[in-house]
Length: 575
Image 1 (cartoon, helix red, strand yellow):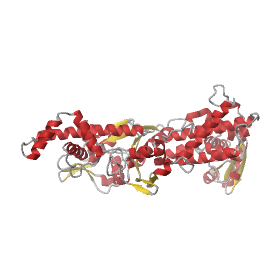
Image 2 (tube, helix red, strand yellow; image 1 turned 90 degrees about the vertical axis):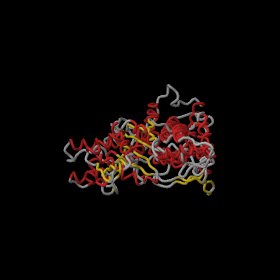
Image 3 (spheres, one colour; image 1 turned 180 degrees about the vertical axis):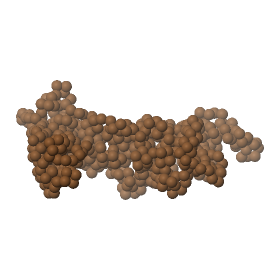
Image 4 (cartoon, helix red, strand yellow; image 1 turned 120 degrees about the vertical axis):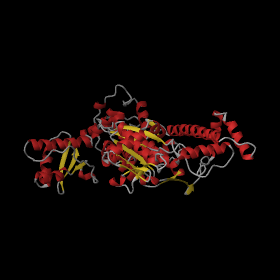
């Protein structure tokens, strides 16, 4: 019996008491079930009686005793104690507690996932860095966290769509094109342009794809020597080619980098496509119809201060050009029109100002920001090695990249280390520590537990013992009521928590909870293995407890693999 199943059992007890006239309350949809801190308090505890007492106009202990009587009649419950002001301390029958292992092995990869869809579609946008340079270390954190959050959302029953917003329109693209053109001419990057060895690499590729640029570059050189004046039109053409092709090449590299990091998007959404499709004009028209648009000083404004923003935002500048904010509004509208109920943005620490304006956009379109919008702000990442900060990228020049991190520690260690800390805390990664294959390295500790169990199961098969890999294996034939050792009970209790960990990670937008859970599970398994011998030794014959403990080990391996999969981290069978 999992905690969720026990909660259902308690709800059923409340429903039966109401139907019998013993209680006059509204039957709750769900109740809280927790693992008590002290093992002597039982396997699980619930404050349900305290929550119902006021509505029932009864003392909490009276309600608790009434429910305890009904719960004691359930075959899966061994003992119920009413404690303190009215807590229910519940100890499960051996078969019911051990049944968690049976359930996990039977469910396999689906264990921990919601049984049904919530009917809510979430759009999750993350990274969305400008296509003007490699994926930075800060963006690497959002790549790992965003992808893990998408997996957690899906496991919790949400419909999920992930996307990368490509900022391929505006001033930054022009500056990038000018930087590429300057590199082709052997000139320094312009003011506020882009630098680094990668610019020269992009420039060489642009030239290889556009041999006609040679003539324009030669004309530029002649112009510099004063022997010939290159036309402005030719220079504009060269700049446009460098911007267009440079962005395409940079975006292809970003795609490849993120794919190699295990991150695949459902959609790469172009900002330019919003302009070309008239989406910005359509958004302004809709906002105007809502009564939130006005004109002043030759510009078009959105009255966002009506919805908590610190100032009104310009949609169209006095020169007639749309603002970035206008594109943000059009993009919000586009997502909602594509059928997403909730829009989730993962933004960096320097984007705090976006929270208020995005909420105002949501409200101006008639939505409820508390219901339709999530804006998650994360903190920066720094790298160190042996306590010394790592500051420079050989390729990017003045910033560190995802490539730098992966080259140093590998994809698994990078992803796990970026996810296991809460997004709202700054993160300093020690490259030596997260690459070390020792028990004080969290990713190794969790992966090693999975590999250790895989080795155990291979050894069991070599001894001729039945495992879940055998098609004839009968999971229902294992006597799980024998799993009564304190270390077995501890392990079963932790295994039963995965569905609730997934639920809370999704509700709180906190995939790091999955990582911390896996570390707890790995530690609990190692303690079980050190205290409870699983396989027979020497001439010993396998017994019923052998089969039960082997099933418990297989259940643990399943949960470790499922949890690592949620984080986008591999579950190796050998280490």
